[in-house]
Image (cartoon, rainbow, N blue to C red; front, side, top):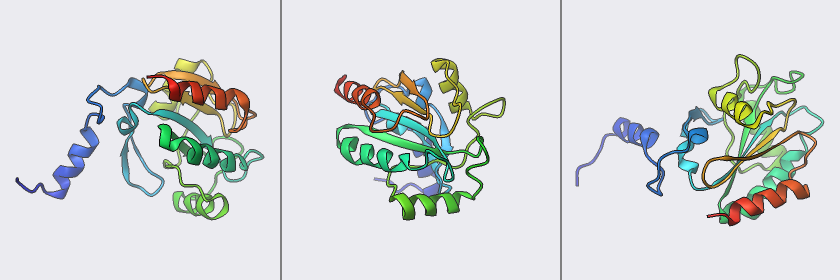
Length: 182
């Protein structure tokens, strides 16, 4: 077997199809950067239930990190992935660098779920991912900790405003239904 050079391996990883052999769903067909600056292909989450949450470190809802990490711990073995998306779009409540945000999340809330780099999530400058989520849901984020839930098929299951806590019955029930679906 031939050894591939690292650059070639990275290219393969970014263009790889999900392990299931299925094509990548449109909402996951995005290449982004992790909070640590590493490239991430969201197609790697095809076949899993995905919860996108735009986050901020200095918001009245910041304590939702605890509930998000609890969801991550409880359901990751069944196929849930929580993806935190720091954003400074609302009240400038995420002013720090990616490194500062990562440190805050790890130290203060022991966040272990994947975090993306700081991203614009609303308006004309919104990332392509967030433009798509807003268009498909009809519900752009109105504040920090807005949540979008995707089923295993990569389709939008629901959008939940900031006031819906991660441990709330409607969100947990939707996650459990999505996890139970083929």
